[in-house]
Image 1 (cartoon, rainbow, N blue to C red):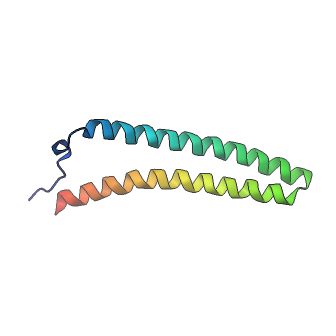
Image 2: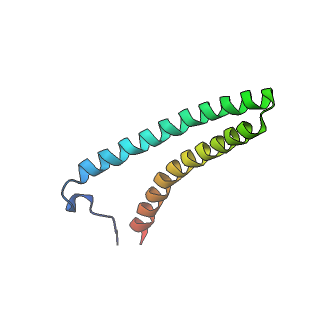
Length: 88
C-alpha cells in the first residue's frame, strides 16, 4: 500500500510551496548575514577587551547557527516524514 500526501487536493498549494521556499531562502540569507556580522563584532570586542559586547557577539553567532540548522533540519524532517508515509 502506497500512502502519499495528495498535494493537489488543496487550492493554491503551488502558491504556498513558493511562499515557503521564499521564506526559507530569506531565513538562510538572514542567518548567514547575522553570523558574519556577529562574528565580526565578537572578534573586534574580544581584541579590544570588551567582555560585554564580546558575549553578545558570541550569543549572536550561536543563535545564527541554530537558526540555520533549524531551517535546514525542518526541510529534512518533512521530507523524511513524507518518505515514511510512503512506506506505511
